[in-house]
Image (cartoon, rainbow, N blue to C red; front, side):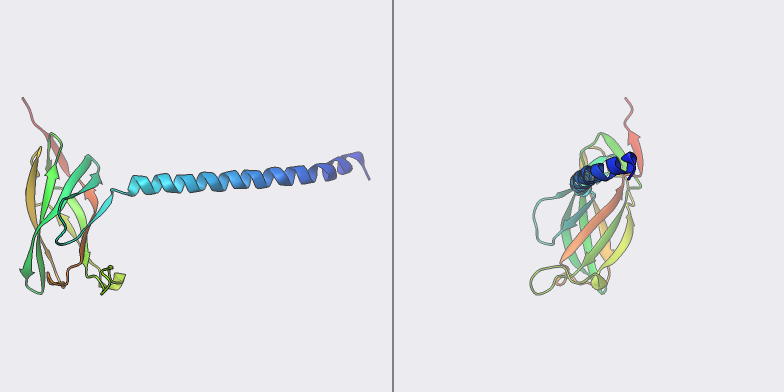
Length: 166
């Protein structure tokens, strides 16, 4: 056997051990990255429950906006929901948009299968003033108030940002 081949054979176990340690470190780093991504996405979608008090904060391109359910009433074959949007910034937001999904809960209070989920793309008909709350009405078809278990808001886009001039 040539000396080079013999040397390679002797180093093979050491190189294999390095590879497994590298793989282990890579898996650890990937797991940590997944947690960071999950934390970053935590406020990109919020789920509101009818009857719950308080508000949730949704992350958008201009920062966070507060959203809460103000009122729910029957409308056609579904629900008319009034959402409170709170703008903590000093900018007026015109044409804000969001994806709104809704559905029912099962007997245990858990969201029903995705087949019962409905959605729409919402565009605010009026600007959201700076430093204040504004109510927007959204009609959610197919689920009456007695069966409405949740409303999810995601994909929030602030639209046009207008700063006040002095």
